[in-house]
Amino acid sequence: MQWAGRRPVQIPCLESPWFPGALRRSDTRPPQGRGGDDMYFTNKEPSKRVSRAFALTVCAGLGYGAVAGPAHAELVLSFYSGANFSPDSDVDFDFNDGAGRQSVNTSWDGEALVMPPYFGVRATWWFDDKPNWGVSIDNAHTKVAADPMPAQFNTLEFTDGINMVTANVQYRFLNDTKFTPYLGVGVGFTTPHVEVVSASGASRTSEYQFGGPAAQALIGVEAEINDRWAVFGELKSGYADISADLNGGGWLKTEVISNQVAFGVSYTVPKR
Image (cartoon, rainbow, N blue to C red; front, top):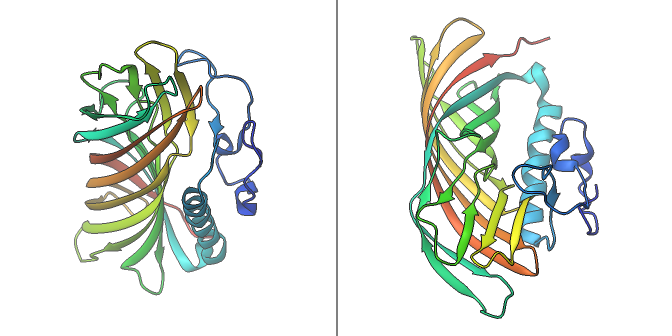
């Protein structure tokens, strides 16, 4: 697997055809902005903690799916949407323009009604021998944009997604009704779309990167429609530690809390 302009990070299980192609794509072209073909990833200086979290999370999830399989677990596929909200946080940055390291407290707008929307997908395996317990891989397309815009920036947003990918442990409270409460916690990583333009316009970045570690907690209720379909509503709170490289040798760091209200639909895959 080759990342743009850098030495490859060797994680054998990521070569699996199950892994999303966008994460394996390599491109050496400069970013073209929101209107162009900027759908590629960079990892200019991969840290050990990010690489390790990435490898463990994805390999653990894919490994479980391959080892446990449909013979030992109930597979449920879910899609959800809703709204996300984030409190203020500090943004540390250096545009490499001679001004040095700076910091600004930033208010975030989740832009839930602005395209692309907040949404997520999840695959959950409920154990046959312990049906209250399960594990899941969750990809939440959370997003934030600075509002109001700090004076040092023309653009500061992650509106094409912070993209929190987590491996989770879940517990459901099985009962004799059609309503099943559940909760879960998980850890993982982010692949944010970094859109940063300095006030002078000299520093411009618009690209996907590996951002850093992530964590989330969730609680919800599922309502059964039939033996295959169900709808659900849930509250989620996610944490993202984002470290981004800026074009021109700069960098940006921030921590984002994403509180989410989600409604979705689930499908239980028939066992073979």
